[in-house]
Amino acid sequence: MIPFNEYIQENLVLLDGAMGSLIYEKGVFIDKCYDELNLSRPDLIRSIHEDYIRSGSKVIETNTYGANRFKLKTHNLQDQIEDINRKGVEMAREAAGENAYVAGSLGPVGEELEPWGEISVEQVFEAYQEQAEYLNKAGVDLFIIETIQDIREMEQAIKAIRSISDLPVVAMMTVGEDGKTRYGLDLEDITRTLLKSEATVIGLNCTVGPKPMLDFVEHMIEVSDKPICIMPNAGRPQYTDGRMIYLSTPEYFSVYTKRFIDKGVRMLGGCCGTTPEHISKMANALAMKQTRIQHSINIGVRPQSEEPLPEPVPQAEKSDFAKKISSGKQVVLVEMVPPRSTDTTKSLEGAILLKESGVDAINIPDGPRASARMTGLALSVLIEQKVGIETVIHYTCRDRNLLGMQSDLLGATVLGARNILAITGDPPMIGDYPQATAVFDIDAIGLVHLINNLNHGIDVGEKRIGEPTSFFTGVGVDPNSVNLENEIRRLGLKKEAGAEYIITQPVFDIDSLEVFMEKADLGDLYMIAGIWPLVSLRNAEFMKNEVPGVFVPDSVIAHMARFDNKEDQLKAGIEIAQSMVDKVLSFANGIQVSAPFGRYPLAVQVAEKLLK
Image (spheres, rainbow, N blue to C red):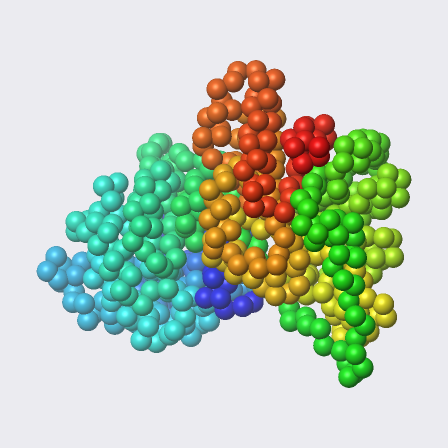
């Protein structure tokens, strides 16, 4: 695994949920030292870690929240501090394996600092330094300081860790529903203080549920240039039949996960009352928003001998689609999702309609949203041979290893495929079969490198393949990415790797697309704007909340909601799509129109201005 400080630069990060409240639910009363269970009940602690790993946690915390000299002393366990911390890391590492990072958890020392209490900042520093040394020695990947009320205590904890390690540090304070610590420090002061510290990531955890935590995040984001981490409680606890019951459901956490990410949160998990079920729902929601993992490998055009490589096929000669767009004419693509069965009747009928309507090419996704469907290559060959209209094949990195990709691409060339869209692919966890494994030997950047090599007559192993392939290579972009800078950076790498055109996610907000265009250096890349005709209010809400990379403004939802019946909603959806076409044609090289539920006449109606 790559170091955590590199991983967080490219990814949204899901932590685990509560440890203490789960231990309590499993029958261990609160008068016990939960940290000592590392030694006396290791199977219990390990099983909780494993449950969180199965639920999708990418970072799990050691059961060492209170394993410092002050808290252990209240249980007469101060002599076992090293064993408890070491065992905590050991069990977390066993559960995590190569699937997750291990964070050394450090909570408050349990004593108030002078003048409110009797211990000094020096004593606090020494306590944190001692615990951090044991955790570091045991092999954690990062440190998490959590549930701190006194900003002075947090400062000492960060300094103590930095005195012995340069590993990433996540620093989370806790505040009440008024947004202040017990000592009256507000969010702005907390944020500015943490920004000055040597913490890698800053944030909040515990005390409050998702709703107030979201309010707090909005304030912190305005001030912070460091990544934000949050771990809310499962709402307010209710005392029932001698037990504390938390009322926020896993589904509720799923909704707020999307909202946290939309606000700019980079790391998130759950605190008191959250369970593996909460984390599982959060994992699904996060997967919908996740910036694609970069697995690019260094594939370059490097022949084994000095003999010149064959000349690549000129762009305009690669396909009719390439010829038209390179001549300065605007193109129309229509998306056709492959069937879930072997019945291609509807697909072929749709292809005939699209060809007769003047559509330039049919865009065929590859297992969209990690669904199990007919391979796009098979449908592409069938359409081109039986209907005589070109296709653009999506090809994802999710399902094939590097050798399989090269084999597929060579075979696709022989079968007549010429237009390709290189896609990393949606993670299996969001699809029909979440237990399916993903490959991801490379991502879209690496795939473009691979295709570019083949287009120059050389394979991934730097061996000549004879005549070069002639793929017209495109890539997808998300103008509404939660991490726009990263999206633009990756687009630059795709362009450098050999991409020739881009197709955007469906556009419902022209302003965000224009902002993206201003910031991104497209150079000689052709830009094709994605257009989606909404067919109902439910379709609009689904697109907004459950389709990765699609941003549907609230104004669009509100407009669709004005109409009570589906016929009027469909008409409004088509008008919105036609309006988007009118707006993008002033600067785009073409459009790609989706056909929701295989309704190809709708796509033709939306694109009619370009089909005349």
